Image (cartoon, rainbow, N blue to C red):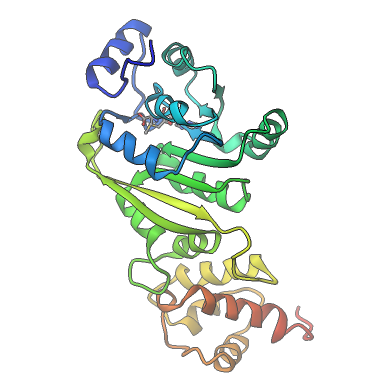
Length: 300
Ligand code: SAM
């Protein structure tokens, strides 16, 4: 393949399938992009420049990889399906700034990859994750990147529209869920573009959306006890139809009276539902329960 050949067409995919005896795997979420406009939206929406180290998740046959390699300093693409590795190597042979890793992204030490690359290459000024994510593990991948505090500036990913809407919802609104608070705690979410199911081959059942998560570095809410903060959110949304008092009473370490006392003190109505709370209100509850309110009380 030369730099001029484009990979975003069903004909190319079918030719590659024949040539390499490759069969698309539904189980691995192999719906490949066939629309140049969406490829461009992802590439430009991700803010890649000539100082960027791109970490791509699930390159497939390399449609995004190729466009990213045109702009970025370096692209490291992580692909689980070993049958795609020779295809990727051939399709990207014209680029000397692309490295392919054959591994499960969830089992890959991405921070080590980034640190090693930064040592070798002093031209790297920013690190950005991109990907048209395999739908069956979208949430685990996003949560892994955020919770393990992978050292990146942004994550620009295509995902099922409903999941994107949850992640990009504003905390305190009807569309939000527990994941909204997690994503908003670690990042600022920007909607990049919508994509209909027809921009994929084969076409999936659902439409998609691309979002960019700009990682909050020094501007995160200050928490004493991150674990308790997430436990409060999980309890709140565990039974989202219940009142805050009742849902939070499921927190193991605290009695209903503890919760009532805390909510009263914080002037948060105990009859509200979790989905009406802002990120800051959840933070104040966990801070109160964990440090201020009960720090001196012995618990069994
Ligand atoms: N980027 C390509 C495109 O847009 O045409 C392919 C996207 S396809 C939706 C998802 C890709 O992720 C597939 O190539 C699939 O093999 C790969 N994949 C699935 N599970 C993976 C995992 N756990 N780790 C890394 N890659 C994975």
